[in-house]
Length: 233
Image (cartoon, rainbow, N blue to C red):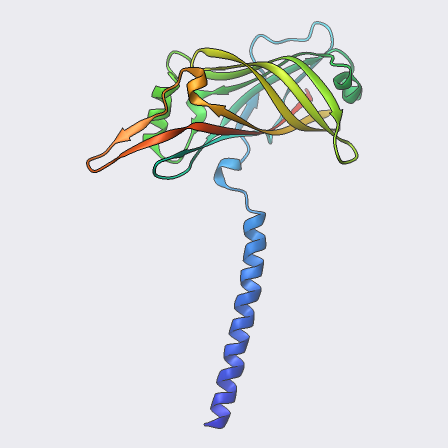
């Protein structure tokens, strides 16, 4: 019996230590996990009508991602862009983009989200979002740059861009200022940032669904996270 108890205690201790090690590893995995809505857009391409008669044309590159998060009286929700379009014209050489950005020589920069590809994992949410965003009449969300300013970031080779422009959602265009973390590697501009918005600023009524016993209403506040790369063809 004494021998049995010794074996049992040793086995139990091993199981506890294994569980602790697995939990620690699991936490590390969760910290590094990419959620479904953070996946790169499946298709990227240039914005129609933008060309570089003078300067360098940059277009959106594979690996770019944009998603939206919001809340409701029931739970948080996410929608991700499965397709993105982006183009920029820099008045300078693609081999010295930092110099051009510091000089404010970005003549044009546009980022477009086709609403037909902005999806969640719930068809009901997608249908209500299309109605709220008036997707049939206004099939895209669009940001157009007016001017930008580049400043040094906290790390070597990192910068912070303040981009002033307009954002058009559901047919309403509003002035907006974005703040993005920027790196320039291999003649590509990598921009990352989070922008808080309110639906009502764009004359959008937050969607709601009436059920038998309750109703679900989306909050006015949303966050748009973008992680995009512009590069020469």
